[in-house]
Each structure stands twice: as C-alpha cells, then as structure tokens.
View 1 (cartoon, rainbow over the protein chains, first blue to last red):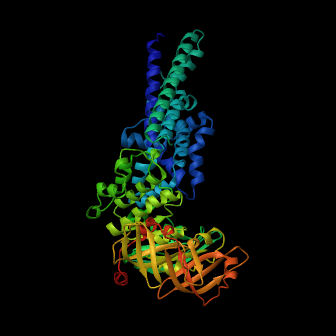
View 2: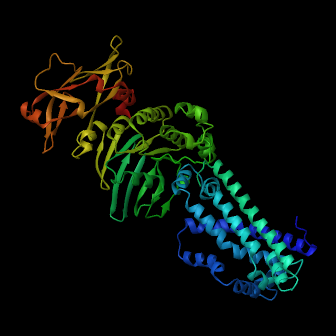
Length: 232
Length: 375
C-alpha cells in the first residue's frame, strides 16, 4: 500500500472534491444545453455550439486567464458575485471547481447530446399525444432513455476535472491545501530534485481513481441499459 | 364532429383537403404517399398546415388566419402509430397508464382492467415491450391511447406491419372498442379489406387530394381503376339481413333482394343487418342461373361497367337487384367466351367459404338500416 504524506493526501482529497463539485454543478446545465442542441432549431445555434466547445480547442491557459479576468476579485463577474453572494472564486478551491467544470463541459454536453439524439423522436410525439407536456415528455421519456449517455457524460467530465491543469493553475494558482490538486502537486514535485517518489505515488493514485471511475460508470450504464430494455 | 380544411406543401408533395364529417367510424383510404398520414398528423397537431382550419366538436384546434394552434398534448386526441411506439423503459402496465396521469379527472373514467380485458392483454401487464409480439404490442398501443381518455382516436395504418393472422386478431378489438366505448375514430389504411370492415364512411385520397367519399360499398367498388396488386385486393361490401343459422351445416344464411348469401360459421342474430365483404377474386359469373354447382351464393344483377386492358384479368361491376354493387375479377377470355357486355343480366356466384365468418363477424355492426339512417 502506498503511504501518502499529509500534503499528498490533502491534494488527493481536494482533487476529488473539486471534480465532484465541478461535475455535479455542471450536470443540470449540461443536460439542458445538450437537449437544446439536440432538439431545437433556432438562429444562433451555431454560436451556442461553438461557445460550448470553445474550451476544448482553446489553450487551457487562455481559458484560465479569461476566467481570472472575469471571475477574479476585480473582474466584473467576480466582483458582483462577491458583493451580492459572498462567493469568491479566485485562488480558492471553488475557482478550481469552476475551471474544471468549464473544461469538462464540452465533453459532457457532447456525450449527452448524442444520447438524446439517439432517442426516437416519435416516442416523444407519442407521449405528447397521450397528454404529456414537453417538460413531462423530457423527464419521463427522453431523460430515462438517454440516461446511459448522461452517465457517460458525467464520468468524462469528472475524469477531465481530475486531470485539469492549465486553466486551474492559471486561474487559482497552486496553493497547497486550497487549490493544489493532484496534477499541480505532481507538477510541483517535478520542479524539485527529490520529488520523483512523490510524483510517482500521486501518478499511481491518479491512474487508480481514473480506472475506478470508468469501471463504476460502465457498471451503472449497464444496469440502466437493462432497465430500459437494452435500448439506449 | 370534424371540420377539416388544410393546405400544405413539403417539397414535391402538396396537400389540399377539405371535409366535414359527423361519422364516428371514418376511414381515410388511398395508396402510400396520398397524404392520409399527413391528414392524421395535422389533426393530432404533430404537423402544421401552411393554411387552413381544423375543428373538433366545435373547438378550433388550428386556424392559420387567427394563429391558433393548440399543442398536441392539449388536444386530447389519441394516436396509434404503425409501429406501436411503446416506451421501452416501462412495463406494459406503465405504458398503459402513462396517459392517465394527464387526462382530465372527470374524463379518466376508462379503467385499466376493463380495457386490458377488452384488448386481451391482461396477462402481459408485468412484461416489457421488448418481449411482446407485434400483435400484442399493437394492442397495448391501442389500450394506451384509450386510457388517455381521448375525444378522438386516430389509427395510422396500425396493422400494416403485421401479417394477415395478426391483423385478423386485432381488427375485432378495434370494432369492439368503437361499439362498446363509443369513441369516434379515424382510421388510415391502404388495405381495402380493413377499411371495408371498419368504416361507416370512407374518404379516398390520391396525391394529396380528396378523390371520393361515401359509404364503403359505394366508394370501394369503383375505386379500383388502379393497377397491379390493388386490383387483386378489390372487395365489395353488401348489406344483407340474417335469416337463420343452419346449425347442421354450420352456415349462416342471409337475405338480399338479389338472392341468398351463405356464410360459413354462425354469425349475428336473425333479423339484423350485416355487412358482407366479398373479394372480387372470389366472385364468378354465369349468364344463366347456375345449377349443380357448389357455390352457395348466387346473386342476380346487371353489368354496369366492364373494364379490360391487355392484362389477363377483366373487371366487371354489377349492380345487384334493388341495392348494392358487386365487383368481379374474371379472366378476359371468360368475358369473350360468355360474350359479356354492359347491360346484360348476370348471375354472380360467391363461394360460402370465401365469406368466412371472421370477415362477417368483424363487419357486423348489428344495426338495422333505419338505425343507420338516424345516425
């Protein structure tokens, strides 16, 4: 068994916390955006689609810097949130979660969108003729049938959040105990001559967590798939 | 009560249909691509017309000029699709009860048990749609639509994907639900036998236009100017009064002014009017009253139409004595050898086994002619 130093353990727990919050908070929005992209036709759709996918193609450091400009204490959004809700992002773990959520969002939306597009629209029409309003159709037909895709999207987002480095370190820096996640801790170790052992320990932990997450999502998706009659 | 008027253009297809009807058993009939399903989609609200107005029981569902377009889930119109479209993630019971959540409370009188019994699906309630046969799925779909307490039921070729046996299994249920639950329906099909059995009024669509409308017996017999397989599927619908059941031979005898009709099996009650459906291929012709033949049904009439082309078969339309019309498909050679011509008196022979009791039982609406007029 690998024995971790207190700092390393803190980094692992912080990483898990950041990734979990990033995934949980972005999931509802991700499902909503995925539904809009899959089912609605409106002018400006291309723009929305590009906006969602932008973090995927932009250099992470650029994303982090933009976050710093807008969500920093003196940034327009950051100042507003601090004044009205007491919510501070810059150089806090919440900021790390925000950066991770934004970086994982395109992957999440993409997986959920594909799953929603695979649901037969005529099943939704059938539900409509039976008296279900569009919101009910979504919650009773579309969402249950695309659940395997929703789970896959959440796992992708979680995995991306665990590994996020560039945007996080730019936005919230690398403060042990506050914003130092596994990747930034590994980075710190590689900057010191004696850090190899610590870097390897954390690398092993990162691999283990990733494998566990993948296995859990696979099991969950299979269970859901059985419940929905094997169709997804 | 449906008032329908709609124009719609989608690519090459153009629809321009207008009709008013009080009929509770209406069929839209025509070849594929004629616009039948489009009309259903417009009534259900799944499609929007470019212009027009659709009313159901004096409620305006769609009016292009006033910008009215009631959304499908507020129309309370049930739709049974060709491929059932059951929700795969729910059990049969959950599928059946789905629409009941949304039905208005006072209208949610249709209960699960009687509907499940009527459709013969009570034993399937715990199963999932994936494990059902095509016929079972379609009956569940019908039950699901019924339990949403619709004001009108639409059937969009519900039997088209099933084989003959399955179709015969489901048709009686559709007849029963109309008779027992009194829900008006519009039935779309390109299968003439289904239309003949189910509908009191038939509208024939062709390339987005209404070509003919009226009682099945009047509309379906002359609608067979089409070639190919359609010609072979031609049927006639004749109304006759049940005289008696011949228990010894298992036959039912019906009276028609043109002669007696014998049907295999015990059908209906004596004194009631029944609809008899005869396939044009099962009708033979004789210029003199036939003797010593096995045909149990011989009907006297006069040839009104004689159609022939290069194909081996000719189509003969006969006005039966007093009422009714009968179509026969015979070989062109027979027409020449018997020297048949328009205006000739003719004896039409139909095999009793061709008029099987299932066909008759399905069509038996048990109404006297007087009752029909009152409707």
